[in-house]
Image (cartoon, rainbow, N blue to C red; front, side):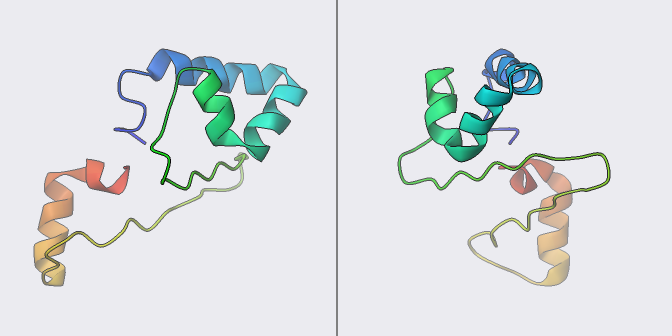
Length: 90
């Protein structure tokens, strides 16, 4: 997420706030996030599948990032992740 919204933090904050106060907007956002975000100035590559879910206070959604090219041992991969956590957040 970190890279996806780089430079678009203001737009993303507006989308979140709008979804919190406007139920119809939230329904549209959850149904077709890519289209709604594009209307708000946040675009993603055409070939990217975008999934958006509504969180709640009693849940935490974790995503296992794709394995980096080049692979490596557990220790090598752990060191690479610790050096650059943005690899986990897209």
